Length: 75
Image (cartoon, rainbow, N blue to C red; front, side):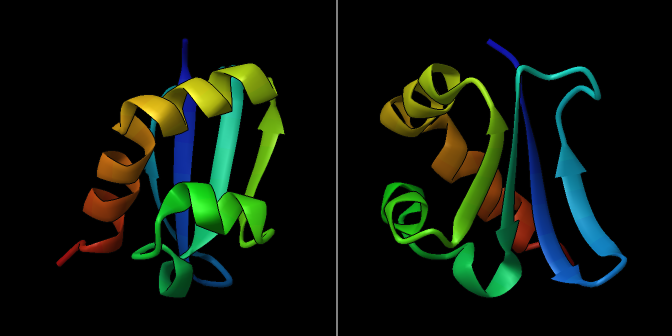
């Protein structure tokens, strides 16, 4: 399962983690990154492209929350 995470701070300012050929690309605004990613996804604030099954697995096992939180707290 490969996921690329993108936390967007401004129009051309993103923190990215994951391979370029990932099965899923998850994008969230920095302002929404501190919320529970599952809730953000259900509210439409966390966007994804690719396999929804892979995304749901990442949300369930907590890896999405950990990575998004780490990217959002960049120095």
